[in-house]
Amino acid sequence: MIGLVVVSHSARAAEGICEVALEMAADAQIEPAGGEDGGLGTDAGRIRDAIEAADDGDGVVVLVDLGSAVMNAELAIEMSDADAVIADAPVLEGTVNAGVETTSGKATLDSVVERAEEAREYRKLD
Picture 1 (spheres, rainbow, N blue to C red):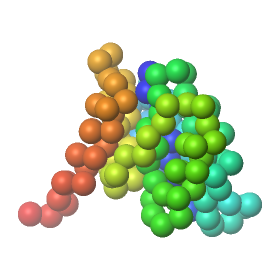
Picture 2: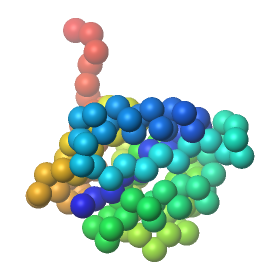
Picture 3: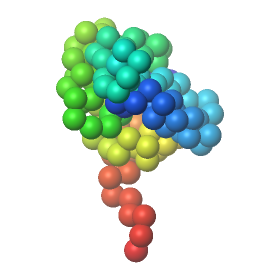
């Protein structure tokens, strides 16, 4: 199964996003990677550990919130042996979409990224 990692500057935000996504995709493998040294920030080592925890050999899609989260996620992917990619998607909506896709028996790394990135087009108001 494709794994997911949620990277946020806040540990509580990352955990909350995982909680919401798991309500929609209870069987998904989603790991939070938020915060740095008990405060706000992102940590490449923590992200790498989450990637490795989420990886069962099929690959990992990483969803990020903003700024240095992208840079540290890129560094974490370089530090890991897992086949991992970053989805260019809003972190909450993208994680929900990606989580649901991972539970499909036909899910691939590309299909999970595609589903996550579809969330960029969502409008909340008409």
